[in-house]
Length: 254
Length: 338
Image (tube, rainbow over all chains, first blue to last red; front, side):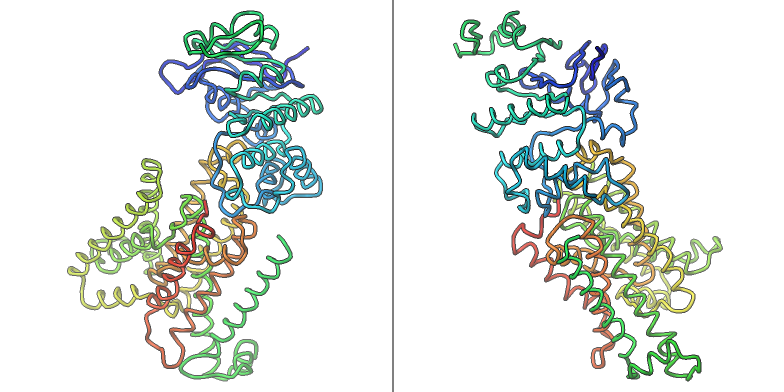
């Protein structure tokens, strides 16, 4: 079996010492992967690097066998989509237009949408439950709603690899669970690989298929069960004021 | 484009057409519509009216359309590029830079007389170099400071600086050259006659075509550079193209018509209020047409019987400045381009 996303000896960072070094990773499609680590540990940097928005300091990243860095930007946009933190100041654009921007890699010179594009936009809005906001302007939405719109935009981009940077930051527990369920369904139904960074260990351990942990400038990768059993979670968060309880499978402050 | 916005665009085109016609009819010698039509399409050249229409009024109306459409497109490009509703060719010092370029050519002629260039080309070149120079400076300031207020202040300071250098040049310039320069500074659509028009048409049309080709990347850039890149837009190249286009448009138009105030800044806001979207596939055509219409209106006012001699820049400022204030006053609704 060939992995969809492969990282070989990758270092990521902003120059100087890498934030995370010597990453070896192979992930197949059809799963939802949580990227966990403390603030400033390099989660966003890693996601941005995989998305091709910044260059890795070393190593090679392959998506379905093709080098992400060397890929033409128009081709990369058909392979990787990303949802960034924060809400863009998109002026007077309604939600449907913003989600429609996700179709840009697939449209012609003027970005006009054809019937299949429109159908994908409506489908993405339906999946993310923002259809009722379609003609509202982004700046008038709540943070959670705006976040869902930006995720719908990435879904409309229809890429095999979908990256999300802190998609649950503004959501309450109910909506976090709902979002992760939706993402997991999408991953399985369309054989997509979805990687999301999060601080919500509890929900992501419950609902994701795999865990990536950034600790001490290294990336640990494994299934949720492996993560729980291996003691890696205790090590990562030891001294951070919380303690992993292996019996309950959850964290407690101490 | 929605049916509403298509109807809006057609309506604006219709009004522009009427204003254009009014331009041909109005003037020191009033002409009837039949006379104008005859002057334009008839072959028996009835000397006076045909010459008035063909050699004076038609070029002036065309100049107004070119200046209005070009400056407005330039303003919208800059507002999207800098993510700043107050960006525009006159506010960010582009017009000042172009003025400086023209001043150097008109007032300090002995300095460059060694270069053999036709006057029209030299003035366009001077204005273009001036506008581009300021644009590059603004671009650097934008990258370094990355906030809108700082950018505006730099633009204003560049404007003052160019003004001061122009003042110095004015002391040095001959009286004749000085008068020409002051008249040019008041702005006019009437000066572009004969072969000059061709020198203006080509760069402005080119700029308009390029900006229309940029509609898709401009939309992506509304989401910010990172999202634009993730959508496959080569952001650096697009930024460069936007800058060149804005420089060519502002430079060419300023060279021929003088530094026209407010048209480039205010028109995108009027268009945004009309079509109620930032989607450039709707907004850019609407802005271009609205700009042509407003310029025709201003041009008409300064040649309206009884108002002749009014400086064009006074009219565009009287019209444009309140629009900009109204935009900011009425809250973020239309102000937020970015």
